[in-house]
Image: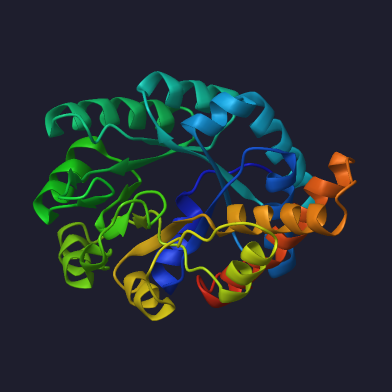
Length: 304
């Protein structure tokens, strides 16, 4: 198997109302863990790294590890650049072997967002890669953005992007950083419905919607960590979102799980210094957490 673009995966999930988890990865253990979980669950696998992750590990390094993981586990993998902060970085990622990219220029005027995303999309299509666009306006609180249906329609029409990341109350990054209690993120399904109606043939993406687990939270605290909620939405809400065109959900549960495994390893074996055992412990917990999400949150198990 090999690295593939997202189009076939999204076409399938769009028609059959399930979602694909976008799991972040920055190193070998995280990539291996996502691939292993996908192989065990027979689920589509989407491994993504942000612009910061690419600068940390290197686009070529991430691609080669993902390529080898696809071969080892005999599964197709979408390798995605998440929140690329410039057209140049998106193009460099594609040159390195990434099969999907997202340009994040939401701080720019909409005319410039369209111009830049159109350029990246054209380059992606020339190189058999897919392009995820994003259109949103910053809300009252920094992490909360909103997408207007008319802007979504204009953006898709002008850029030709393959999928569209929308903001309907989902927070970017970790929930819990400065939100007052009366400003907690709320998934606006009515707005999502209007966006879906405005772009009925476009696969939609939600960022930062992870549904955490009590077990992981308790284990993290028991091992000396602090819990920061990773999304406040329910599986039922996400299931409804899938009926409204959502095909991909960016999640951070694998990062929490990795931290749990590493902290537990060091708490139980404080003199352990072998990175294989330390990072391996994180990978093992991550595999189980991802498998849980594939089965019980995204319903992507058994889709390959």
